[in-house]
Image 1 (cartoon, rainbow, N blue to C red):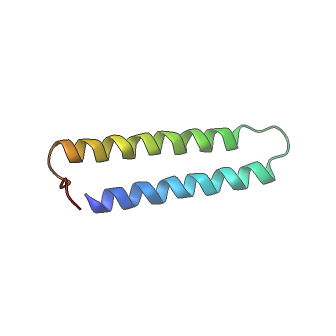
Image 2 (spheres, one colour):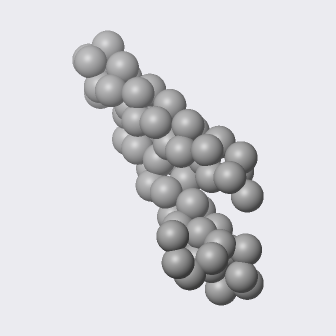
Length: 64
């Protein structure tokens, strides 16, 4: 469970870094930065749903 969460967070940060690089390097109107940000949003929603399902099915305890 933790490994999946850590991997998703790492992928979200990598996508954000790619979007930053694309925003600064692509001056020709390329849509690569927009696509990288869309991937980041999709990964964030996936992480949220994964955590919600883990809590619902009892894989994540209610108290920390």
